[in-house]
Image (cartoon, rainbow, N blue to C red; front, side, top):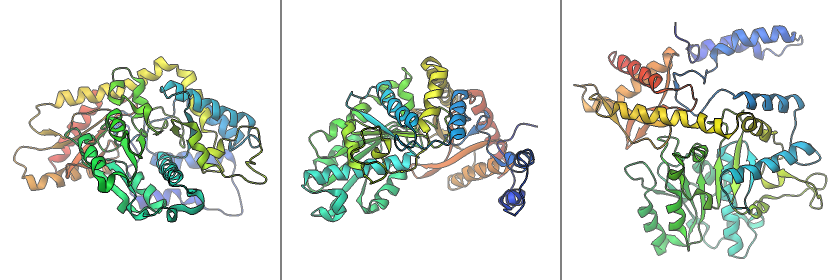
Length: 451
């Protein structure tokens, strides 16, 4: 029997298995008994990201160096908000952020902060963009909020149609509302249409109200890489803050053959990145870079006993909202130090090449419709068996997806590209090879015959 992604059990059955773990009675149990309970009742229901048949999301098992760093951080339970909480942790986060800035080619003025997820990174960068706009208009955004703007209802955040939904969360949480989102069309490769963005920025009715433009280098649906440099050039001479959401794709700038796709990203006002995706470091582990480190000062809130304004020591917590933050930098630094950058590039290159070869092998297949040319490690496709009515093709893709879910043996995702349902094959772990992707396609073909 092939190894399974997870047990394949239904939610009710999983809940029944896990109930003893949440039976918080008066009597405890030994660590050995507890370990046995977890291994028997929980582990079979956890997803195994390291299997070659896992093709659905940006998860991978912990890399050995990252696991060591995670264990040390957990053992000491170190919060790293400031020097008082953890002298070593606070300094390590500061050092690691600056070292990452150099690794990715940001200017010397750049700085970074660690966050819980890319969602929070995108939210913070829009706050910083609004804060800068407020300063230009002569008021303190931290004090007055949106009410300080003359026409807050006209503020605009321009994003690609393929931008991550976390940007929607951001405008909701900041009080801008989804009405502030101006969705820029994508081109045939699912990238932001720069010409369409230029039309937005040349329109007097909207130009001065665009407070931020968000480009995505590696969209979550198709892996498309917006032309960051061209987007930044289009925004030159405007008041827009340019943010690059590189949560998924930024790591691939380290692979020389793929780096040209991302040209110019380092000139953005801010860039987000999730190392936990390709590098196999423990969650939470997200980073927000600012081209001008001084921009992080807009986040600072000082206290009488904590993060005092006169404190001369490193306080990473002044650069972002969480006042309790884990020592995320340790797992990332330990992983990169353990592997060395040559092996890191090798790790990153493998899934990119696997998906590229997968697409090439499928070109011309009569029962496969490729939805795009892959920029990164994602390929969306539709199975179109001969004789299947067009109106049933969306249902067919959903049927295949559900069959995979029910079996627990393989995992693909489903999305929509150009308004049509598509199967989404993702390669993040180096364990995912072209052959493994082709095997899953064959399984999809078999599932299609059942409909």
